[in-house]
Amino acid sequence: MSNASQQRVRVLTGNEACAEGALAAGMRFYAGYPITPSSEIAEVLAEQLPRYGGVFIQMEDEIASMGAIIGASLAGSKAMTATSGPGFSLMQENIGYAAMAEVPCVIVNVMRGGPSTGLPTLPSQGDIMQARWGTHGDHPIIALTPFSVAETFSLTVRAFNLAEQYRTPVILLLDEILGHVNEKVELPKDGEIALVNRTLPHDPPERYLPYRHTESGVPPMVSFGQGYRYHVTGLAHDESGFPTNRASEIEKLLDRLHRKIEQNRDHIVEVEAYEMEDAEIGLISFGSSARASRHAVRLAREAGKKAGLLRIKTLWPFPDQEIQAYGDRVKKWIVAEMNRGQLAHEVEWALCGRAPIHRVTVYNGDPISPLTILNRINQLD
Amino acid sequence: MSFRYEIRLSGEGGQGLVLAGKILAEAAAIYDNLNATQSQSYGPEARGGASRSEVILSDEDIDYPKAVHIDLLLALTQESCDRYAADLKSNGILLVDQDAVLTTPEGSFKVYRVPIIQMARDRVGRALVANIVALGLIAGIAKIVSEKALRQAIEARVPKGTEELNLKAFAVGLEHAKTLV
Image (cartoon, rainbow over all chains, first blue to last red):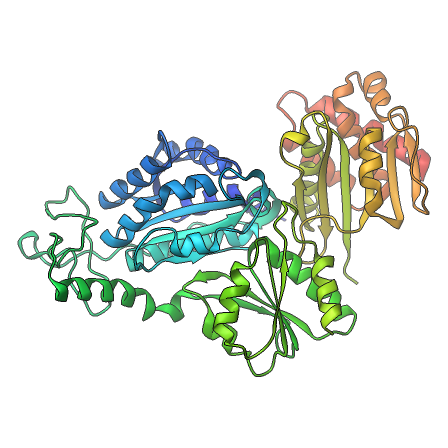
């Protein structure tokens, strides 16, 4: 192996790969408040960002951190923050602001046990619904969830690309296991990574409408300080950005906010099918639980059982159609997750009773063991 | 035929087991072109009490990054041996510090009792490098990661200025392993 390729082959934790992915995506502004098990993301970026000409700020709390990245993004920077459960709770109000004001940004939540301060050092996947509905009101959201260190790098890049393309906050859900596991990763070379940047307007400042109802649903976006002036608010607003109480304008705004995500859901939603071609027992899982699930599928296949795994990479919008596509063939489903059944509930909703759904739920701070899932497969077979 | 090899390094917080695990993973992944994962018990219990670091090695993708059935267990304290030996495979390897671990569990696995900490102190000069002596022993006993890769990984990972000390510790462990197998 040559020296150059050895330098790209590294052993990194998920948190380190997330920081590397953000830098590769062009992120140049980070504001955050360190919290276990996400702190290494801040640690790496505090050291690295100044070398890239970027800014790292440790804020007084997570509310301010979220506010700071919104401001930085409006000024033209790709911006992100990283946190865990309690900090993610504090960020919710401003995540709603980013959704309403259509400010691209990335929020990383390295999940730990909850509720409240819960289990700082132990894994959980209990923030599925908070990622979707943590902030109030009808709002669209995108949430991605990698299952390996290598994928943490690539999905961090993707999180920025989707945020820029659709002018939306994007949530990246990791968990403690993925954040802290060291794993082999081959980092792509510069230039091998496709980057997306927000669309700039062709209109001159006097004709620029920051919230124009474009066909794509995504209005072009300028950076503050480039000679364009416009109003940014969390209040319902018209195309000019100023507040409005007119029913027709409010409805148009909310419909467009959802339309820009819904009409592109096929582009946004990603799942990975593993041994699903002839599967009769289908597992559904994500994040580090999907690692245990894959291992269980491998063991079950060695014993001659037709098991497979549908692994979720995009949690929101939910991959309901991708699950429904197996509805006629898969006889039984097992949903494996580190919480009390948040994903299973959503899968039940997607399948509308077409097949029984069995649950493997672990929420005591232990990781899900592949053997626990294998036992469940054996019970059903 | 593909393989999956699980190693658990256990002892108490401060014995450098996380570093040893990371070196083992980097040796395998970067220099021997295998796949490797390394994880550790993380939290308040890791300081002082039983501590562990796990390394999974494979020539294909590693599904589950934590240990399920352990091929090789290193135990540097009695507590860690008592607590972690239950997951050892029946044909596995148990490597213990013979002065710290007085009783080993019954089982068909192979047991190696080596004065690891004493060797680090007396033959290398620092008890601190017992973790690297253990890596030398593991290299010689398990032969799952090459000696060359481990030397390269040690040189790249240990604090600057301690390379020679650590390479000596590795050599002491490796040499002793050759008298055992």
